[in-house]
Length: 99
Image 1 (cartoon, rainbow, N blue to C red):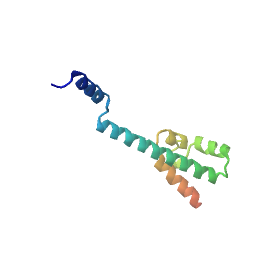
Image 2 (image 1 turned 45 degrees about the horizontal axis):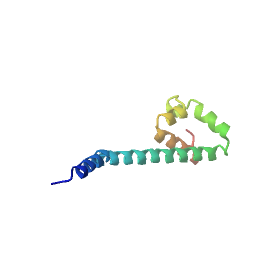
Image 3 (image 1 turned 90 degrees about the vertical axis):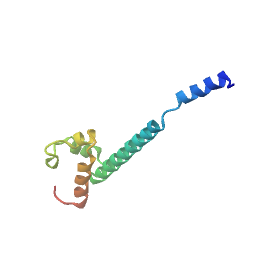
Image 4 (image 1 turned 120 degrees about the vertical axis):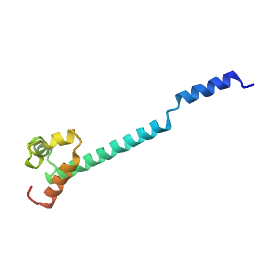
């Protein structure tokens, strides 16, 4: 006959274990967040280099409406996670091409 204390302990341990799918989903979300943060960091570093390290110029650029963004500010795109459009603009700036 199984020991009831052991069965109860096994049941409690199983209750505390997260589902494998939940853990996998959490890891995937962390990886996605980490990837976005790395892209954001890279984007801001590239912009900072283009503005010779001037935080003031960077702040002005981020908060000014931009025609390539339909008159929206780059800061709006940053805050909504639309990094692709900003990465394209930075690439054009780095190449010295007009936008």
